[in-house]
Image (cartoon, rainbow, N blue to C red; front, side, top):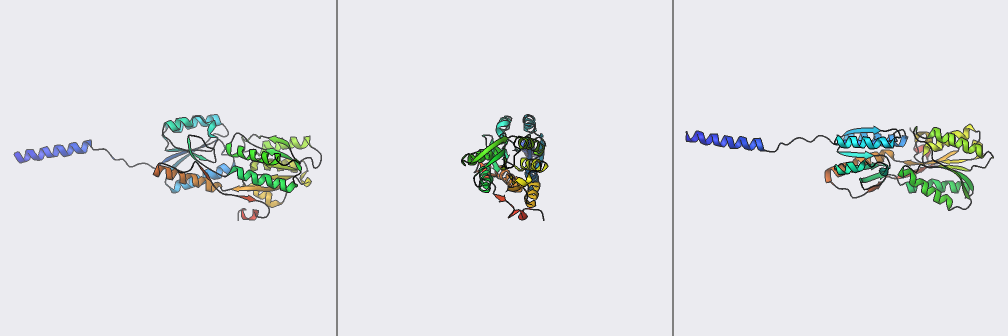
Length: 314
């Protein structure tokens, strides 16, 4: 009896220890939310697709949310993913326009920028160097014109990576005494920007009908440059030697450069590299809990007729 009582007592102790021991649950793969109002832009599409591919290789779940140009809606969608308990948030928008990021920070959800901007809530922004790209294309225009000419600018101040480009272009053109900025245009980008840029360029051409009255078009990204090209060709003014430059080197821009017409230069951003680099930064943070940089620049290349063949699809 004594032995049996002892065994019963030991059994109770063991069972009690098991019942009160902490339960270990296998952790699910990270759930990452990617939010942007700019998925209609080819560059954003390439970045998001590259991020999705990298995330899939890492075994992550990715939820891509596009608000189609509606930044106010982006705030409510960020609140949604915060309430759903996302493990990380990736944004492709000016962080100053989305106050809901403060809620993500309060919830302890890390935020990463994918060609976005810097803010206290954003751990790291992976992007191209907008200052350098604008300097390359603006100086290309100045050199092509021999420092003399009348230029139309297409800008977009609402988006930090693009806003930087406009600042640099205006500075370079303003530092060239015989360069005159005829007009500065901010196109509607709801549908990508080509259609509205074409319409606005048509109006500028109508207001400046004399040959030589427009020397060049500098665009902070390729969509307005393509719209301007369409307007110039539709007006029958492609023979005036109007120089067009953009930034991004999207497929349409590359075709236009290769065709040898007015569209002469763009800058190839490594959108695939940006998307995959964002995934790498998230992986480092999730494993180590810290990052060493707040901005990561991915290299770019000026594309002209001399090297466009290297960027065209095989």
